[in-house]
Image (cartoon, rainbow, N blue to C red):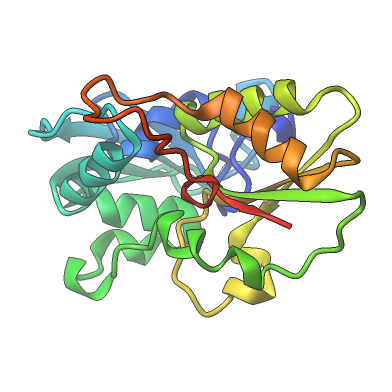
Length: 245
């Protein structure tokens, strides 16, 4: 499996196919994860000699919150974090099988950190990591050189289809000469003291366009006026989306 087809920041190789599961912290019946990349890239007869563990979900509780908006997705994640989960842990080196009752959050941490005992850790000892909202107002602390006249910074999440579409629209609005870079927030000194989800990212857009033009173009790309607004006054705020410098 190509590195571009799995999520960065996780100790276990988690394919992009599990984007929705990570975004909602909702792993479903039948989901299977392997501790070694060989399980995804090599014939099983060869991979079995390298893969140490695999996890198969055998029971998953249904969520009571439906995803939709970015804010609602965060609520879904929070609700699912502590919900019960049952799984089978297989050690392929000695062919042992363990049936484990745990939580969605415990499994998330295990995939993230790669530490099997986390499956049995008391849930109250595993604090739920913070989302992109934790760094949204701290982007000015992100120390990265401006490579062009203007730079727009966006706090994002690699699992979110909403953010992927937003990034695409901004890139399209700024034109082909703009440059986009993505940074894992957990690897940045400015945010190292925060317990962030491994999928939280900072996206930078560098362009030779002047700041005023950048704001106009980003507004055209992302602004959707409220259908129920009471006046004709423009409610757009660039700061609600990111930082322009």
